[in-house]
Image (cartoon, rainbow, N blue to C red):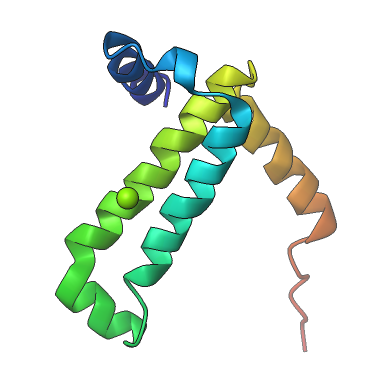
Length: 102
Ligand SMILES: [Mg+2]
């Protein structure tokens, strides 16, 4: 994860884009890219979309993550820690169901 984060931030910094990237615009960009991802599934079944348009789906998934990484950097958030912390919270909220024995 750290390697990908470094690459994304280097790409942004090499182009001098960091100054234009504020938290609000990055949040909007995440939502727009998520909608581009949804567009890949519009008017088809999930199976058809994946079969006919998998590359586009993968690219939109990457776009969402790229903007998310930039937003985390902008807010000085450790994204890896945030995910781990949220998984702990989710595990409490959604415990693994106990297996019933007969
Ligand atoms: Mg896109």
